[in-house]
Amino acid sequence: EPEVTQTPSHQVTQMGQEVILRCVPISNHLYFYWYRQILGQKVEFLVSFYNNEISEKSEIFDDQFSVERPDGSNFTLKIRSTKLEDSAMYFCATQRTGEGTQYFGPGTRLTVL
Amino acid sequence: KNEVEQSPQNLTAQEGEFITINCSYSVGISALHWLQQHPGGGIVSLFMLSSGKKKHGRLIATINIQEKHSSLHITASHPRDSAVYICAVMKRGADGLTFGKGTHLIIQP
View (tube, each protein chain N blue to C red):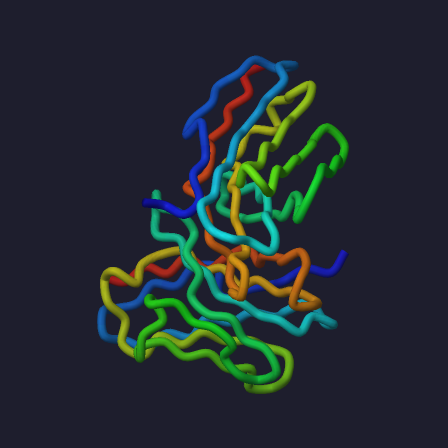
């Protein structure tokens, strides 16, 4: 069964450094999402992406964050200058159509020191 | 106030028991999702509902749109059902999901 993959599984970085989290969606999916989950808290929506542009973003998704699909396969989340409070599990999710099941990747655990 | 509320927050039951997890929401929605989060952190979609009832194996999900309430039932519970069960809604006009805090379920042998 096709699945969403994410790399790396765990990233440790120093505060102020840039990180790029990568997601490979299921091949015929057109809608892409990033969510985050701070340890012990609920999952939160960050951004949705369709047709090579952001379709919706949350208040969390400030100027430090960006997303792109550079090569038509990978879907990336970049954090330009990480802060301690960016430490969380980041999940990519993909969806074939605008309505339907979202398929989640295994997550990337980001630790900012 | 959270837009998606789940109860109970924690539930411990014996193997074989019938389990019910509840979800209430306070916004207009286009769909409601039930998700399972494993101890390792991975999230699996169980159901997507916009009306009525769905069944998959020992899992049943129902939704009452008028009352803004959904339930997830597990019949003949088993220790492997131990996980966090999360209710999430797609608000009308929105793209991303809005999540509840989850129900931490432990099934003891």
